[in-house]
Image 1 (spheres, rainbow, N blue to C red):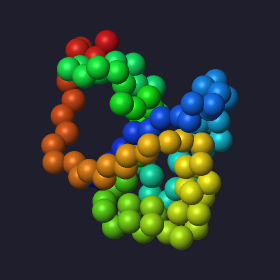
Image 2 (image 1 turned 180 degrees about the vertical axis):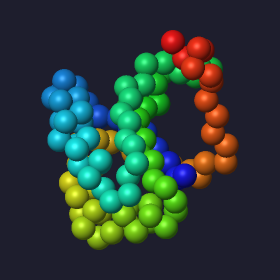
Image 3 (image 1 turned 90 degrees about the vertical axis):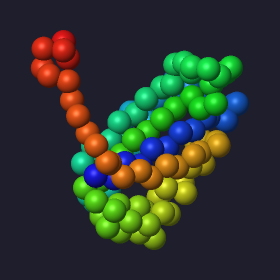
Length: 112
């Protein structure tokens, strides 16, 4: 599995609540419509450990079944055009593309 992680901030003049409304509705639907996306998560970063301040305030993760699917979807010229528009709402984005090596879950009785 391939995971795209995007860490980012908002420009100083941005409205946090307006951004959250857009990100959790319109943009989330857009993320899920990307061919091959299995899952997409959005997070507000709350704390860091062993570092002063928050280098990034938000994180998005999108999961793809394999690298071929990721590349054909993410680097599609039409998607890149849409992404360029979305990127105008944020600053300092860091895109990380990772490949799953191991995945394990706790047993059901530990999750609740």
